[in-house]
Length: 184
DNA sequence: ACGAGGATGCTCT
DNA sequence: GAGCATCCTCGTC
Image (cartoon, rainbow, N blue to C red; front, side, top):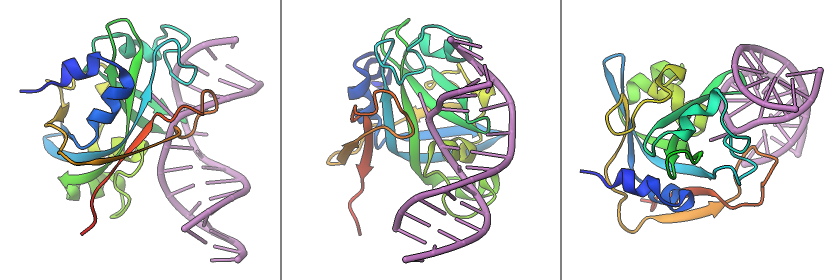
């Protein structure tokens, strides 16, 4: 059971905040990997100059115009893949960029895919690589596909907001959200 | 810890 | 042809 579709169908900033602390799971190549989502960014529809949807429909951002709960994967800087959860109404190109997580399941496989033993998924490109996600997963369902969002956010989590990373337009909107886990 | 610079390919003007 | 929703390595401090 999941409130995910309803959650994503609403305001993208609220959706981004409420995705923090949920689990992101991939089952790719017969291997299950799972992370706890710790960092996300909200990207609005055609009114957000930093959003891929700002200029309207293109081949790249086509998935953003589909139903909330669709996975939008794009290539970044020619090298990396980045994951988004499509939000908002159908036809409104809003999405939540899934920026970082903490390994929960399949850490060995993440190490193998990343080719190193540290910094497994502390950035959007690293997260995609650790989970084995590529452009071929673009447009799949985050409820039923190979990459899924699971669970409910834990109670009492602390959220810190800040400016979005790596953008030049609308850089003043504090639409980046990190979850601060209580220390030991 | 932090900053500079390069890699790399696709999208849109 | 410009501009990226990035990451890595190697240099300093």
